[in-house]
Image 1 (cartoon, helix red, strand yellow):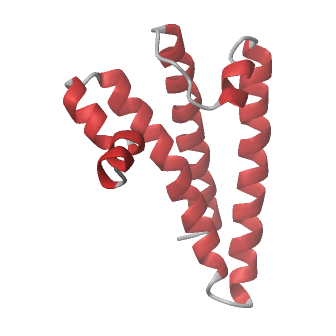
Image 2 (cartoon, one colour):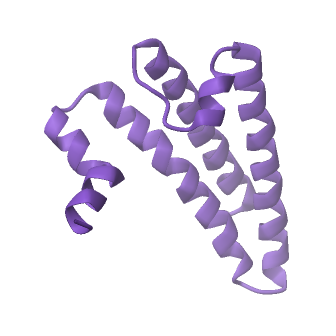
Length: 118
């Protein structure tokens, strides 16, 4: 894929993540990340920081794709960043769609760690 595709996917997932986080908190969900929870008090600060970090991430993706000419491993940076941005976006969508509580609990890390580590 071209750099443009990776950047577009990254921006799309960042937008979905930001909007679902915003609406989820407005619906009564708690934000686990304390830094983001503080920024949610001010819409300009929240969306501004998301825009800044999305722009930085898009820049890193574009640079890593250009560096792919030196080593194919640089493409993994772009792929990894897109995947790491997709995880919270899909997680938020799952929480907002509202599957049964048992399936949400089964997909979270905390309860799984409590089961695995007594």
